[in-house]
Length: 209
Image (tube, rainbow, N blue to C red; front, side, top):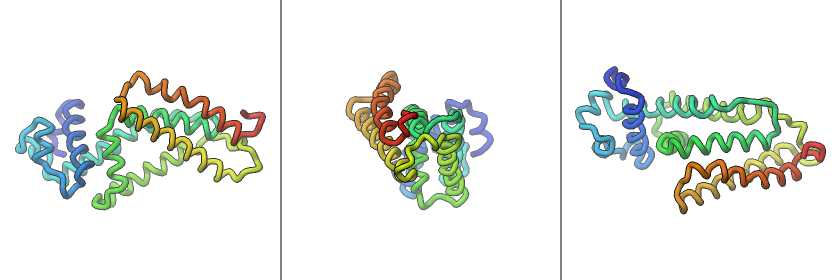
């Protein structure tokens, strides 16, 4: 991005870049249209190239912005504390899902970048670092002694993750069918407490349930 773009206020930068992210996510880099981007963003083609040298520059600027925005607004909210694996995944799921709903264009673009074979190596490396940060957050300060000793620990953790993934997909299907009500997100997660109690009975020692 060029200096004139950096001088725009945060809301303008967010609007232009997330508009570009939506186009790149839907069509991929090669098929993405700068004409559609400027039309959706409400700016002229000349203004776009006043802010960015090229389509590639726009893509890479969007990639860096998405990566930084995702990291700053998501990972920085993860205050690690001593807790069980089930409790950690419940908290991470709540934080991530709120972010995904509040910033859909950024979230979709981050997902797109994970699977984009056209992306430059530098950004693949950044995304790999993001994966590793997520994995580290998942395990840091987790009390593994809560797990029952008669079942393989890795098997239990995999089954717990599958349960969480399935519930998140159910939430997404509900929001897609009924519309997203931001006031109901916490309520929907609170309903999951019953499942958490069942998982504790299945996977934790009796004293930790």
